[in-house]
Length: 466
Image (cartoon, rainbow, N blue to C red):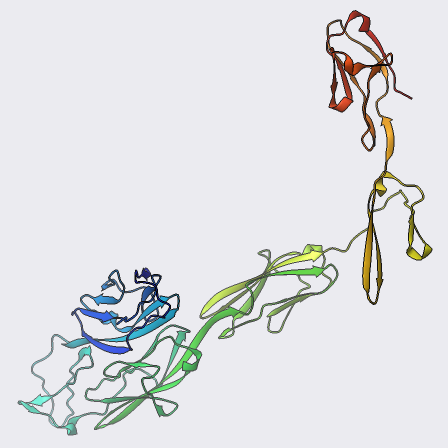
């Protein structure tokens, strides 16, 4: 159901609700369950109703806008259970439980029966009166209008087969223990470890034929005994309650793992659950490497001599009767560095006990930042030098002879290298060409363009400067 937000004024106090109560409702009738809120709190307060710890309410249960009540329309037997009203605001939350028992009027199960029964004299006579209702109807037998005495009453029988019933319930869910007594006029007592059970952490139906464990926990795991008594005797039935706990991962569900190439890798899938979960390991959706070992009840995956091919996504899947879960390991293998072979040899000498670094023949590849670090027991100090290698200008392309048709354009290249970047100057007969209107310098001087070549410029000798 949706969470309802109150529009009450702000308050720093947590909400206040009424005390827990038990309500009996006749089947088919309407009823109202109230949260009895005396202090909603601030304007961000919310109200949530749950039935047996579930927010999904039956279709005939209606919740008005303010959420402080629920209406049961045409109450059904399935409406029986514990309704919990939870009110929250910024200062905290309060809960109220309303234990609802649905009363059903007595109804004969057998609609048709023999009105006349013949029996041989001296033989036992058994007449069955099957009825249903909640609480269990009290049956009275009469003969010619007079009530039959207890002398003819049989001891109670619990109709289910066997002396013990196994009840399995998932943690947090509701378990119902049914004591199917087939005789009327009986008193029912529930015991746990030989001691009578009170209603502090369980719920009884009015006739005590059912014991309900709401929000079952491991502490409820035990043997419960139902004892039915009447004037003719008693019968008992044991219920072994087992609380199932879904698998839970201890720690993070996703873990990033780094392992050095050649070292050992250990992945721990620590968990708990009841019964103990079964574990399955996979890597990238397939089987784990054959060299991997599963230890500690398959909770740990260990592998030695890891290489880069063992990187990937490893998962451990856990499952038992109560549920499933998984943990993911993103494994990254750190590869050991390898030196690339090179024909070039760079010689650097450390002189004067480390105070000087000598590079005999400086190359452009030596350019960078050199740092000197001095350390002793008291600490350390550093000093950095930025080495800038200057290379004389070099013209890469060769000179040559160029021809162009009159009034056409001509582009002459001058590709250069050097550090810092060289400045390019074009001249003709000692005169800078940049002064002429009919020329353009392109690519920072590495191209020289004559826009309209004149007759006197048809043949141009172009040579590389020495």
